[in-house]
Structures are given as C-alpha cells and as structure tokens.
Image (cartoon, rainbow, N blue to C red):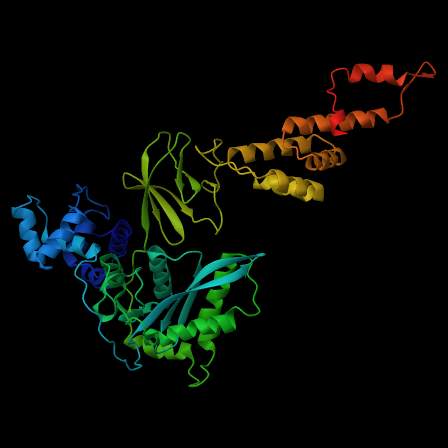
Length: 491
C-alpha cells in the first residue's frame, strides 16, 4: 500500500509537469498505480480493514512436530480438521514468528574488496561523560567498505525503529546505497537462523527494499567479516572521544556528524593513503542511486485525547487542536511527530530534546493552553534542589527525612518549600538543625519549633517606650503568646 506522503509526492510531481512513466521510474511505482493516485489527487481511498488470522501458538507447535515441519500438511489439517480458514502466506508468517523450523549454520566465505559491493552496520555501547554526568549511550556506525565512508550517531537506546531511522538518515545523506549490508546476528533485523541461513524479518526486508539493498548476517564468531566497521569503532574510541566535551546528546551527535562527514572523509587512510571522499566519488557509479523520494520510517501511536485536549506519547503531552475529544493517530518519525484524525493532519511537532519528560508541547506562535493535561505528574525536584542549596543544615535534614516515596515525599517537600518561602532563612535553618538533632519528621512540630524560635527572638528585642516609661516585659508579651504551645522539651 502506498502511504500518504508518497501519494502526495506523486501528485505534486504530476502537477509540476512530470510524466507518468518518469514518475513510475523514479519512485519505483507501477504506471497503473501512478495513474490511480493522480486520479485520486494524492488522497488515500476509503478502504475496509481486514484483520489477519493468528493461530494459537501452542497448536502450531504441536502440528509442526506432528507434520515434521511440512507447512503444506499443517495448512491442510487446520482447514479440514480444525475448521480454521487461514491463508497459506499468513500461516508461514505465523510459523516464522514462532522461530519454528530453523536450519543448521554454515560457514561464511571471504569477499574481495570491490567498489560498490557492500556496506556494513554495527553498534557498540559506551559510557561517556555528557555535561556533568556519565551516561550510557549506543554508538551506531554504517560504513562503505570500498571508499571507507562512515556515518556515526549516538542513541540512549537502540531498537528496530532507531535502526531504521539511522540507516535512512545515513543513506539519504549520501544519496546512494550498496546492494548488500553486512550485519551481525542481531534480532533487530533477523527473524530466525544465523549466518547464511538467517531469515531477515519481513518488516526489515521490506524496509531495505526501498533503498535497493538487502541485509546479510555473518556467521556466529566471524566478526572479521565486517572488520572495517569494527575498525571504525576503534577509530571512534581513539580519535573522536579524546579531547572532546559534550554538553548534551544533541551536541554530541552534531560533533559526531561533523567528524564523520567532514573531517574523516578528507583525511588520507594511514596505509593506502586513500582519501574516502574522492574514493566515494569514484564508487558512486557502482552504487545504487536512491529514488527521488523515500518515505521516512515511522511508528504509529493510537491515542485518545483527554478532557483538556492533550495526547500523551513517551511521557510528554502534545496539544491536539479541536473542541471535542476524539481518538488520534500519532506518527512518530525520526525527528518529528504528526497527529492525524480521520486521515487529516491536525498538527506537527518536532521531537523534544533528549531527557525532556513530563512537558506540555503546543504549537509555536500560538497562545499556550491554559489547562494542565490529565494525570500529568507534578515532580518536586526543582523545589528540593532549591532547598538543598540554601544551607548545609537543610541539605543534611532532607537527606535524613526523605526516605518516603510517592505522594508522601512530594507533599512533604512542597510543605517544607512553602514554609521556607515565608520564614526568615536564619530561623528556618536553625529550626531544621534542631529537627535533625531530635529526629523530627512531623511538619506540625517543625512549625512549632519555628514559633518557639520567633518567641525567643522577641524576648530578646528592646521593648517599646510608653509615656516615657518602659513596659513590663511579661505583661507586654503575655497577650502576644497567650496561645503558644509549650515547646520546652525541644529547648
């Protein structure tokens, strides 16, 4: 099925005067399909979704053993004896997803270093200092074997969607792809089997087909099959990391982009003196040129809007335009999100920077919504940070008292922060110092300690003069502290 963005691209190219056959050749779509999309003005036709049938996994396992792995016989038993109407291709998909019928491994052979023959992809974990903290990241490198061109990017976590985004970003930057991409036996692309017998997941096989290449897994323990990529990680560790500081993950990736696409391509390789940028120019005639348009990878989130008009994705809240509550589809692309309702795009937002959570995101240039999202968390990390920075005594008391979790912890921090804002700093610090000494965790008792300290400070103040004479101290203070609680036990 042709997606919405590709349909729009076909219709726009037609409006610009490009012929049907030329559009078909550039975007790799049949002329009949191009004609139909032009007749539909680039819009998706109304279709009725038909769910695929999934057979009980335990039943499939039993039948697979009973029939010695012969899928055709399994298909006959399901239809004739079990009464399950299922297509043959759907049955084979279910069997592949259950990793049934794996074959034995075979050895891999050596391949000559030829222009345009292959590219390689791999990942490697690192613990790097970003800002003031050391964090774990995953480095991803794709490598053209002949020209030694590299593309490098770092992620907090690396899954199948991140792999798609990385390969799309790298190949669209180069504009070319090799017919083969060598990978290890990662389950991000592999469905079952290893080495030459590995079966690539249909999702990843279809993804690679858009760019004109296919994934090939090397044999287990044969990491040298992609030695160029392994050497790239060594270069990252010895040339990219040393002497560089990273403020954020975005800053780190920008430096990695400049290093991999500007500095390294123009630096001669040590032994052969080959310059990757010039070698890549020569290699382009052997590579596959990418189509004029390729739909970026995305994942679909089905969400409902809350009573305040927000939809939550990845711990952030996105404003959905409209006046009523309805279900939406949120398409998460590599760098932005698009919100759809009934196939109409309602809004588009860039992805928030790394580490941003619990944030309200609304259209730029428009007034922000006045309501908070439903079920939005109200963290007290900011208030706690302010309190700890006031004095060492306050920091020590918070370390002692904040052993609770959940709402109790947040409520106590907010009450203490409110008390801090309406109390003199010297009195507040002295009160918490005494509370720490006597192991007090009650907010009411801390407030009483503050009253006691204020009472003591008032007794030490000079008394006002009335008619040329000083008032009696006890009589003057009696009215002011008649309702005070006796806190002599804390003195």
